[in-house]
Amino acid sequence: MKAALFRVLFWGVIAAILIAGLVYAFIPRPLPVDLSTIEKDRITVAVTDEGKAEVREIYRITAPVAGRLMRVGLEVGDKVKAGATELARIEPSAPVFLDVRTEAEARAAVEVAKAAKTLADAEWKRAQAEEEFTSTELERSRSLFTRGTVPKQRLDEAERAYRVAAADLLTAQARRDQSQHELEVAEAKLVSPTAPSDDGGSCECLVLRAPVDGEVLQVIEESETSLAPGNGIIEIGDPKDLQIRVDLLSEDAVLVKPGLAARVDGWGGGPLRAVVRRVEPFGYTKVSALGIEEQRVDVLLDIADPAEEWKRLGHGYRVDVSIFLHDVEDLAVPTAALFRSGTSWAVFQAVDGKAVLRTVELGHRNAEKAQVLGGLAEGDAVIMNPPDTVAEGSLIEMR
Image 1 (spheres, rainbow, N blue to C red):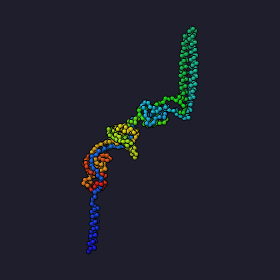
Image 2: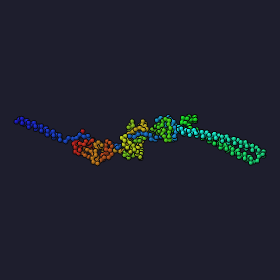
Image 3: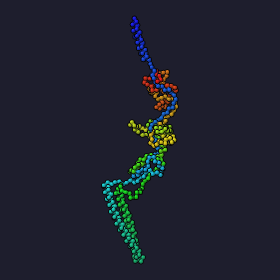
Image 4: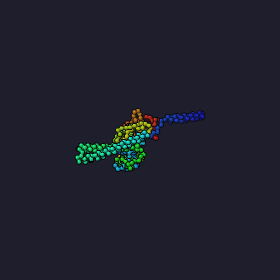
């Protein structure tokens, strides 16, 4: 009897324990979650991208004519003075090498010019002799006419013959000079590029001087070289007159307008205040690091802080630019609490230990928080990063 009672009690206890375990296993337990309280905060919406500092007015000095550029003696950072500092010197180009046929033609042209010169010299000597003879005849005719030996007609004929001979002498002299110059032209075509100059080292050089006060920003051509018209030589500008250029995606650029405040940092110093001066009216295609074609628009900004605060910032330096589109102080909800519910934004609000789905109306937002226009009140608690296990009415507890 006692053994039977013991077995009943034993199995009863076991059954009670099993039932209690099953009941405990199916009792709903609160989900641990992180909560955040809705409160007023400053919400700043900005467009951020990389940019660079650059001199506002860059003067690119180019070759106005073709020639040989002499070595540039200036270095980057050297100061220049308008109208006084010599930037570059351009000399005439050296003659080109002649191929065999062209050289043969040039030498033949020299021989032709020499023959023409010889002929012109002979004609000049003949004309000179004729002029001397007619001059003597004219003097004789004048003497005879004075004594009444020859008639007036004879004197007139002598004068006419002298004038004709004098004109022929001038013509012969001109032809002689012309043939001499033609010979020089023909000989000039044979001048070698290595031939020394016969002008004593002086030449008609073109000296380029600084158009404005400033510093050398870049020496494009430092060594002696041949230049075509328009080839760049040197760039100068005022490094104290900097602007910031940032290329924004076109969909971001349409939100930016002149006068917006901005912040410049990431250049090695403290944050700098800046103001948008201009949004370029055109865009261009740029390939990103991932190989994606993007439409970019340049935006220009002026630095608002005193120059002493960014005196170490130089031309071409990389910077990070944030342009502030909106800056408001209102109720804010963390973006980590937001999710899409249909076509609206929603959050899970913690109410009496349960999760309650709330649809919210948002205003401006950034990566961290969003402006609350409706659906939540100050002091409400919302679930941060709600897991998939949270649903309407779920029991929750603060982690």
